Length: 235
Image (tube, rainbow, N blue to C red):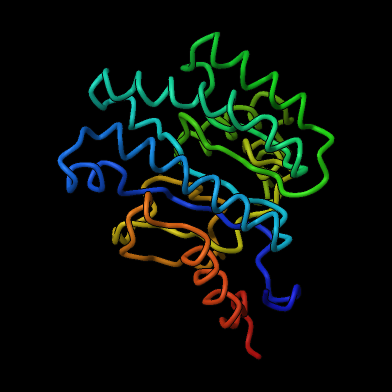
């Protein structure tokens, strides 16, 4: 793999194209989501093998609640099933599991399963897998501002610095993504990590998510490793 110094510390993926993948094969959209789970497994394995510290996935946005109820229900059931099936694999591979987002909209059953897996994997030392569920970037910024306003004195709010707000985002303590991958040919970030992606490198691919496996993941990492990140500075 690439020189460790050139590897991204945090890779984030907008997993797009499941529905189109299924429809192109004459199947219901849920079949695309099922196949997409295999891509999650493949990319997580690659991240662990290559020493990437954080892999985050945009699994379900706040806007996705507006999808047909049958599809929403299927996605939530798929999340439950994935937690059940992947627990042993995460423990074996030292993967820590987190879910971030507006969890108040999730069922008690799903929240309980998330909490159980989070506790069970909390000491795992290798890659941290973050699933963004019921999340939007604007919601994240708004809830951070509300928290800051409720906790900080007025004089501190008047001189609020960006780093002061960082600690109120749901990603507090997690490094911002170095690389954001979006599959399926769409060229936008869809209200995802708007604050955190200020200096993130973007990688767009036409590959639909169910077809995005280890070779495609490592191709994106190689593209990132060849870039020169200047953060507004001159080199």
